[in-house]
Length: 338
Ligand code: 5MM
Image (tube, helix red, strand yellow):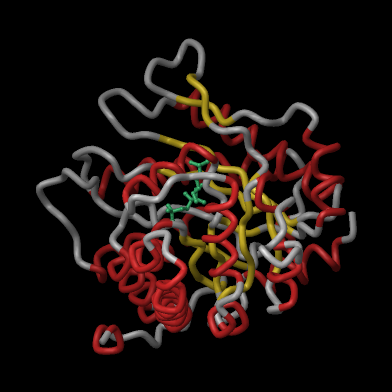
């Protein structure tokens, strides 16, 4: 394990003013996104879509520190034959790769899931490194409902994340560890806090047991928010205060950065909440974004599968990347949204 390289890459991923573009939608998920804008999902349409984002110069050079890719994309070439990975590198950004194989029902735990993909992972990592990946991502999913999550399911997912992180580092790849507590359902903000606190505490216990080098990792968590169906919603300041409190209770200072998922928040809301967190306190971690939907909803809508819309779609992508870059420094304001 090259600890210097791992620490440098992890720091670059969370550099002030920059964050991560989560473009690792698996085939099923990207099809859902394309269905919503009336675009057929084919290898070429997925390539065209991702290519225009990676060719958006101002966003990629100034605000996107890294891009999480899907297995298909890391092997794909742009229309002119240039590997998509090379476009990302040429912009000074880092290619990354989603390596989990998705969630499956966890036997004996009704309603709960386990993320799969550990078999053969070390060999796949070595190949991804050769293809240019310098970081990876694994997402565990924790749902809140009556009687769940259970301690057993949280522990099983934390153990898988820890094993994945150790395998990444053995291959000189920085692991993004993503334990996502979903915002589906009607639970309160307090319930989200309690579950997230236990999830993060368990995760860092397991990373310790697996001897993971924390300086060479990035945490990708949810914010502390009420469920979408909860009657009492929260302000950005309430979300920021509870999110900061949970990290102070659970995340070691050795971790260089925290890059949030957006989890179904509307795009401007995700920016406002990140900004509120960075305005509220000077934190021992760089706190930024690793957004999928909150970065891509606007460009997807503007693109709608038409070549003639690419410039407008790139503008929409640049705008969201810039707004989130400002939020990662606590310098965003709603008036900048135009
Ligand atoms: C980009 O979406 C990723 C999920 O892909 P699959 O469900 O197809 O595997 C997802 O893991 C994403 O990276 C994170 O959840 C962050 O995305 P959001 O949209 O929550 O910011």
